Amino acid sequence: MTRRDAENNDPPGGGGGIRLAATRARKESVLAAALACFSELGIKETTIHHIQRRAGCSIGSIYHHFGSKEGIAEALFLDGIGRLNQGMLRRIRATGNAEGGVKAVVEYYCEWSTRNRNMARYLHSRDIDFSPAARERLHQIHRAYIAAVFGWFAPFVEGGEMRRLPPETYVPLISGPIQEYVRRWLSGQHVKGPRQVKALFAEAAWSAVKT
Amino acid sequence: MTRRDAENNDPPGGGGGIRLAATRARKESVLAAALACFSELGIKETTIHHIQRRAGCSIGSIYHHFGSKEGIAEALFLDGIGRLNQGMLRRIRATGNAEGGVKAVVEYYCEWSTRNRNMARYLHSRDIDFSPAARERLHQIHRAYIAAVFGWFAPFVEGGEMRRLPPETYVPLISGPIQEYVRRWLSGQHVKGPRQVKALFAEAAWSAVKT
DNA sequence: TCCTAATATAGAATTTTGTTCTAGTAAAAA
DNA sequence: TTTTTACTAGAACAAAATTCTATATTAGGA
Image (cartoon, rainbow over all chains, first blue to last red; front, side, top):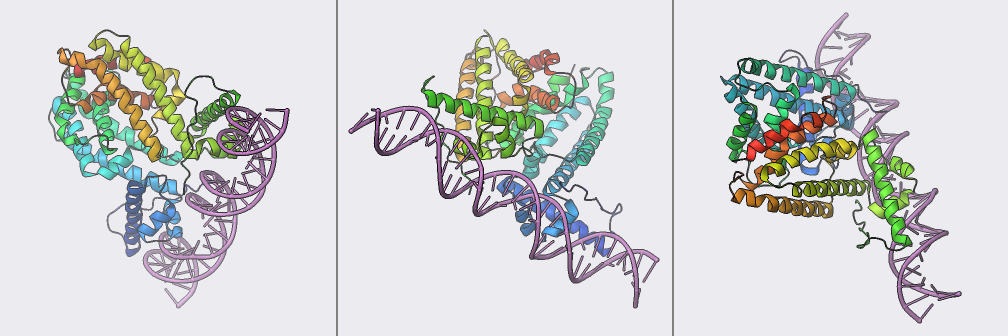
């Protein structure tokens, strides 16, 4: 039976007592160690022991905070996707029209992936088997993000600047190509980084959805 | 230390003796069992024992043929990608012009994924850590496929029907969106199957690369 | 046909790795 | 201060992958 019951005890506010700060620091150090190990050794090759040694803490401590190896992977994934979405949303909202918004999606993804290579590579991992709870949390995050993005773009569809398409096709049409390109780049299949092709992919994305 | 040294002893020609036929049959039954287990239980949850029981053979036999659990995963992956590429190439070659070729890529991928759901889902798995040998074999297969496809399309680029782009961008531009759509569909994120959107994605692919 | 080497199968033994358990420490609350 | 709770540590345990040893089968040559 796998333990999946570790609670997220982050304090809602910022500081908190000595205890809470220490806890947060420990959790972060474990996540950082995990990402480093995953990047260097691969997810499967990485053992709890590797992470534990690198984070400089005990097995007990890790299990106390994360419940299982999978729990670490989940927390790391949620953390990364949260950051990416947040930055993306901010960037989209900083633009003023449909074309700018669509191109911002592509461009920001290029930049973020270049700046956070390891996390970007990790987010491309597919078979992390999330616990039901984490899966639900992920969906929640995803729904909220999608709602925010679609909310921003909706007026432009209404206004006729963008095509009206089946909702589930927008993301693949806009992000599919650049995601695939970046994935290949991260796995070492080509040399040319995303920044060198971002204009091309931004154009393509826009022409796929413009009217 | 992981064992990765299982040889591929498939006979070059078709039939062979009783022994070779039996070997082939056994290997295939193991691969089929593995795919079934992976689909039902997930890759990580699947144990050698599950596969072994389902294939109706012993542990020793599996290790003799595949060397490791990862070895099974590799063989299955190579097998699947080989079939997909082969069918794709045949389909592309059956068309007569650039537009037909590009659209064929999208359409065939839709059809194949619908017909081979489990394998399609499996091919979307990312973190199978291939042995150096398998990795090399995969690259070899990939290079051969890419060479064949590019060979077919090259005249149309020369002839000015298709844009001349950095070579590594064609695949993401053409296949990226439909791949992403299918991936989401396979993971249960939407109801509408690929066949219902293939025309849309085929159009988008073509307009991304046409002149 | 019989012998030998290579191939294939089986399942027990071993090792590796993830998880649980028990004990103890330090901070917060009463 | 006392009590409760959160946290840390590492030994004990269990599950899974892998290796090992024994045996059977087939192909090929004397």
